[in-house]
Image (cartoon, rainbow, N blue to C red; front, side, top):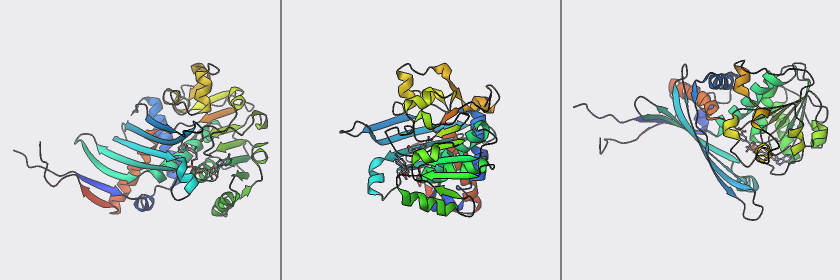
Length: 344
Ligand SMILES: NC(=O)c1ccc[n+]([C@@H]2O[C@H](COP(=O)([O-])OP(=O)(O)OC[C@H]3O[C@@H](n4cnc5c(N)ncnc54)[C@H](O)[C@@H]3O)[C@@H](O)[C@H]2O)c1
């Protein structure tokens, strides 16, 4: 009769996750590209997210969101896990908590044991920025010089860093946020690495920009199609900043995973799809471009609009490195699921 064992779980609070290197954007860019490439090769199992949405009773617009995101990454990562993510507009209004708060669980498949539970809030922000950076590296014009960043919140910080790293030729970085003080503070954070100019209006930021990234919590579109320059690359991370025409006029619409995205109603892209104005054939998956199944940018004039849904494989590949580094540095708190299993 074998003796029982008690599965040991490493609990990493946000401070541990940061000490273990979660904010290393250069590594995150490589890892997210690897996760998306593995997806393109069929080395990732990633069922659709389960989304619980709670609308505001007055406006009918989404107020709260809770999402479960499981995935398995095959070799060489070999990890199963899940992210449990939540967003609340109340947090934004109160200002005492982040808009999005996330938890990641990593699992040892062979032993059926959870091995780590960690804050996923920072990893979510980093991987979301990194996905936009990977898309920019492959889809923006190589001679892009001017970038516009709309939204200076949590994702604004990571998207700016990721895109600036991915496109080292950028010379002018414009930043706009309704909250100017937030934009000024973020620009000050990046001073010394990149000169970031806080601008007066969205139109001033977007007009003439080669690259545009949007990271706001708006539910009401405010970027007009006519402001977008031919050949520009858009990374739409928030899902509702662009008016419908901006999507309908794009030469290419690229997403991280259309099968997952197309069922999500709270985005302009899916509303246009449901109305029959956009068809499946109009959408390209970024993983197909990364593995060479579908061409990337085909001309300097092509206006490419990338929309990210956010994928668990991006979270888990970073979480795996963070977990390994935390073990190496002896970070975190060891938890046990039981002292002795009651039934087995
Ligand atoms: N695609 C993904 O994978 C993914 C992942 C995480 C978050 N997101 C999305 O990213 C967006 C930003 O999230 P966050 O955590 O950074 O939120 P946040 O609250 O930290 O930041 C949002 C910022 O947008 C600004 N803002 C709001 N409305 C604006 C407007 N109309 N014009 C200009 N600025 C405006 C706010 O002042 C704030 O600074 C959300 O829509 C969120 O759902 C996407």
